[in-house]
Structure formats: structure tokens, C-alpha cells
Length: 234
Length: 336
Image 1 (tube, chains in turn blue, cyan):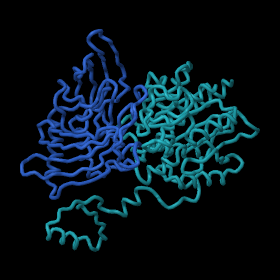
Image 2 (cartoon, one colour; image 1 turned 90 degrees about the vertical axis):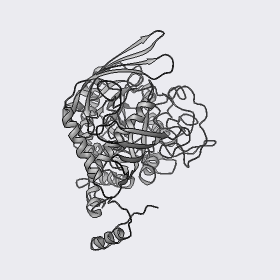
Image 3 (tube, helix red, strand yellow; image 1 turned 180 degrees about the vertical axis):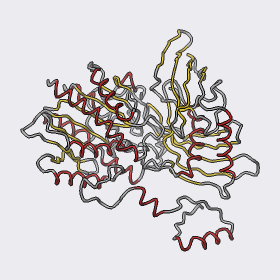
Image 4 (cartoon, chains in turn orange, yellow; image 1 turned 180 degrees about the horizontal axis):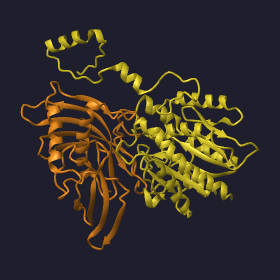
């Protein structure tokens, strides 16, 4: 499964910074897609889809992509070309505005449950959420396979680390919703950013089968592993 | 150790000065707690279904109270039936709009079988109110709003992401069974998990969950349910079991839904559209001969997911209702 933020339209390279037309794919519902089984090579998908700005919902252009999942277990090969609706300058300006706002905080930002149970996001915390969206899509990029996909379910907590240099840095705990297993995966994410530079993301996701509290699995955080599953859980 | 402080307004400046003087770092989480509380929802109980707040998420008590009000206001049209009890002994209620006569053909709608899918219970409440404004039809409407009450209570009290029931079976390490894998249709096949810690755990045997068994018993004893719709979120899909062939109804339903706010839905059989699932509700109902068996996955497609803002409850319910009407009308006009 493919997920959001296929990165730079010119190629599968570093993530765009938040507000920079964050490409949000409608997973599973690519308006048109083609599947090709290439014997000895792997599975190839041809996709055409529209994107929208994650923050505002406005149209952010269309993309054409191919994704090859090689027969042997290596990373998928992606080629992608997108039309832009925003120009680079506009994107840079938004990034800078966002950056300045965070830099001018006198105290480190800390928050939890974004959105809350009712879907609310404090307006002041929207940029922090946007940053989490961008950062967690790099986690999803790494974890996704041909049969496993992810969504950002919730930002469980965020804490800003004040730095002496110009970079801004956040520590996140994010909950990812995994499909089709329906599991909720808890991931720790350390995110560093400076406008004009790609987002730096370090992450660690709690191993599955540990009955992570967030999902419907365990009562307490028991580390007992699951019994062998009957067939794939998809 | 981080500490949360709620500061009354007159003390605000003093507290800020104190914190700054002692070099305590702080950040403002909520500027105006009273405003936030008032905005969030009207927590005081409404006295009738006209003043009930459909644009907010409610607790199980509030929803059960709503049902009682609805019945009290419309004693000749609406009745409430207890079809069983959950694992934690919560009543399982089905609201029925009866057109008179005994055992007329009926359509069944359930919401909230997966407890974290909050927009579905909220839509169910809206459907309940809406159903009464419909002119008398030849079909009864049966609506179970809180199909998984234990799970729902748990999403409010402890874990917003809880999906399953809250049963604990002998030998199971973890709590809860996926009620949408517990039905007696391909039970235990690929598409469900045999691990109790999994979100798709099918349970020790079919109908092990009282939430599922009560519906099975009800459907069998009713004997005249002609359409069955199970409502989930999210992904914006209209799904039908493998083997169902009347796709024009689905196309029409999806078009009707989309006509209101432009919300795009995809339709298809479960296995080709979403993924393989065994022991699911509509597989069982279809095998029982209920030809028009559908699963809905409501808004959105992942941006908010389970945490859909309350402002989208009513639009979601309104557009979904248009699709339900297409299905109802088709069933009514194609009696079997």
C-alpha cells in the first residue's frame, strides 16, 4: 500500500517541510490504478491520483507514479511526477512564517492528544500537528509494504527541545493506524528542522504483539507475544 | 516532573510572575478553560429530542437517555427493545420504527460495532431522529445505535482507540474480540487472527460474543429482515459480500451520497475493495438469505480517521442517510 507524502515530486527524496503542499494521497482509492505482475521481477503498480494540502484540504495537484515491489525483499522502486498548484516561493514563505512562529516561543511547546477524542485541534497547535504529519509519513514510508499501510491516528504527546542553534526540535509520540491489521502502533519520533532543509526524522516504533495499550490488544502492558496467526491477518 | 495548573483569572498575573521569578518553564495549554468547556459540548442533559445536540459526541448514558426520550415522544411509532446484554452486562437496545401490523419486512441498521468509530454511533442517533420524519413505509426500520456498549464506554473512560468487545475468555492473554470477525461465516479463515491480543481476534468460537449472539438470535427469530446494513468508519466505502451481484444499487447509493456534499465513496465487494476479512457480519447475514447486506465505511479517508471532528457528524449522517434510502427503497420495491 502506498501512503501519503511520496516526497519531492521530482523523485522519492527527502520530505517536504510542513505547509509545503504536503501531498496527501487518498489511500486505496487511487482514481485509476493498474497492476502488473512482471514474472521474475515483481509487482508493478501504475497510479494516477489527486492530492490535497493536509492542512487546508485545498487541491494541491495531480500525480502520476509507478511503484515496483521487487520479488526479493528490497525497498520498492518509485518514480513519480506531480503537477504543482503552489509555487516554490509561496511554499518557502509559509515555511519561514511557521518557523519564525515556533522560534519566537519563549517556552518549549508541550502538548498531548492532538487531535483530542472529539477531533479538536487547538489552533495554536496546528503547526505542531502539521509537523507531526510530515515527520510520521517518513516513518510510514519506511514501514509500508505492498500489503501494509498506515495512517496517522493521533499525536499522543509532543515536547519541544530548545536548541542553541537555529534548528527546531521536537520529540513526539505518535499513534499509527495500521491496515489491514487494524493495529494501533505507538512510535517515538525525534524531529529536527530548518527551513530549506529536509526534515530529519529519527524514530522507534514499539514492536507489535506486545499488547501495546493503545490498541484493543492488551489490558496491561504485558509483553506476551501473540499465538501463531492462522493465515495472514489481511 | 511536569505539572498541570488550572489558574483562576484573578491569580493569573501573580502565578506567571512567580513562575518566571523561579525560572519555571511553562506553556499555556488552554487559554480559557470555561470557554473550551462550553464550546466542546453541552454536557447538561437536554430535555427532549428537539433540543438534543446532534452536532456533538455523546456518552453511552446520554445516548440511552436520548432513546428513552424518543420513545416517550412517539409511543405509537417507536419502541425500544432489549435484545440481550453485553459481557459487562450493559443492555443491548434496538430501536424500532413500526409501521403497524405484525412482522412486516424490515431493514436493520447497526452502528458502533467497533467502538472507536465514533462518527457511526453519532450518525445512528441522527438516523433515529430522522427515521420518524419519513412517511409511513411498508418496511419496519430496526436500528441498533450502540452495538458494542462495553467498548464504547471504554473509549470514553480509558482508551479512545479501543475497537473490540471487552470479553475475557479462558486462556486468552488479552481482552476483547473483534465483533466483526466473530460471525459464523468462514469463521477462523484467513482474514482474522487467532491471537487474543490482535485487533482482528475472531474469538474462541462463532458467536462467542453476546453482542454478536444477540443479533444472530434476533435476526433468526424475526425472520423477515430484507436488508441489513452495518456501519463502520473510516475509508468512505460501500461494501458487499462476495457473491452479491446487484451492483447497480451500490452505484446508485454512492451517487446519492455524493450528491449532497460531494463526498466520494468507492463501492465493491469486501475482498476486492478493502481486504480479506472472515467471520464478518454481512457475510453471515447474506448467507442467511438477506440479499441486501451492506457494510458502510463512513468519513473520512485518513486525515482525522477515528478522531473525526464533531462538526462533520451531521453532514456525514445526512449524506449517508441518502444512500440508506436508496437501499431501503430498492428492497421495498424488490421484495423477495
